[in-house]
Length: 351
Image (cartoon, rainbow, N blue to C red; front, side, top):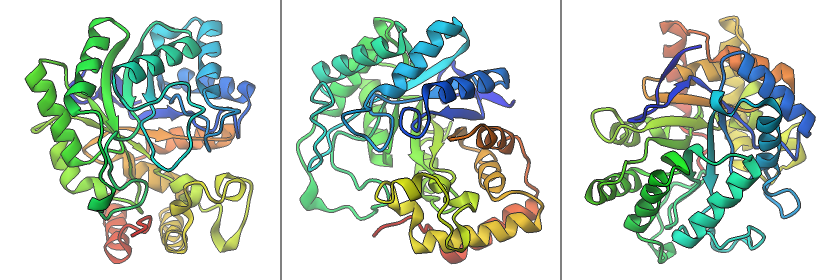
């Protein structure tokens, strides 16, 4: 298992990070424990979760994923062997999330309330990485690309968000902090605020990234490079919610996220992405790999990759996804993937 430092931190993470957002909705607690046990046995000791999980978010299940992880940590007594990451939710105007206990405006009271609840569910007194799930300010999110100035809104200042992260580090409740669904502007503002305040900067950025959604590799890769602000990428959506696994090819509707929850993350399952998935699947067949292995091996090969967040609803998927990130693609295969991308571009885009 390849390991390296995450951004500017002292966290040595594996190239594979275990995603958890299906636990409590598509997966039972018993299945979650099976995944955790297998991952840890195979060198994947980096676990990513969020107060909002499982998905799709709803008031009956919110926080259940963290509870499952906390129960496992207590039963196994392995907290010191695990790098544990979770996230605080941000405001989402127009969407009723009042059932999240606190009003998450990313001011001090809401961040502290969120972290206290996560620590209680996780049955630990600290997390290794605490991430802002999406920006407090308006930004185009989740497939939307056009910045619409009329959607700008008041938000908790960058300095306030950074200051509280610094306090939580001093208090020993978090070791490091990171960003998610963020832009180059947001990264720069957060890092410059950290410099002014003398606070440790964010060490990671968890963004959507896949063969069908490669926006990160332009200016964000420069912004987060070791020579710039030095944030490691934690890539989610590498399989586009399972679409790039090929299981939805030829109009198939197997059991899975896009079949069970067609309105959730529909950007991953639009006709253009389905067409792109077919092309990548054909390439995978030519080089003797599964479509899921091709996509995840490609992501793991990127120079800026901190860790590829994998997700699975079965043990077979989990094993394949871990092994996929250890596969080395040859130059010819990488060139063919670039050629497909050059023709089809970022098919998850919604505008």
